[in-house]
Length: 166
Image 1 (cartoon, rainbow, N blue to C red):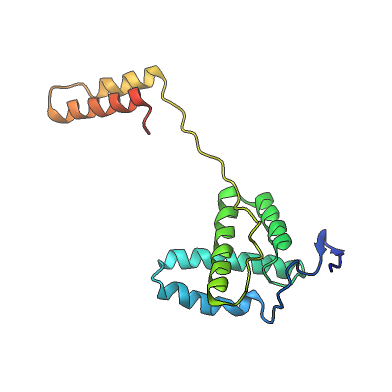
Image 2 (image 1 turned 60 degrees about the vertical axis):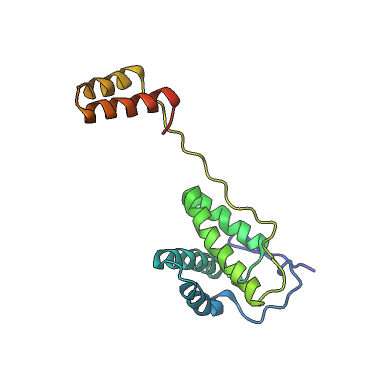
């Protein structure tokens, strides 16, 4: 059974899963951080994961939603992230929240994955443009010489140019 109530453009409804949540996500952050540290995750990784989870929690609070794992809420959060930041940032934050979800599953805090059907944000592949013929010629000209270093550099430039390696 779902109930809908719209406030500030966000649809409020009961969670779509049948699990009873006695605790909200903020209550798990300290234990999760301890777990990540005990697993020897780098401090930067821990900060990044926590940033993603805290971003979702702050978004829930801003929109008067319970900070729980709910697929529709997470999709709305991601949509707003994509409107206000890059796809890479949205994916990074989403990955942090997913890591929290994985830990909650592992610890038995939840008995099923409420985000199983929420796909990771797709990021655009960066395409590096090929060098123009004049640019390649300029690089080769800069490598001319009889010494080992010059010949090595020319071989590298030719290899990269001829094969399209990056």
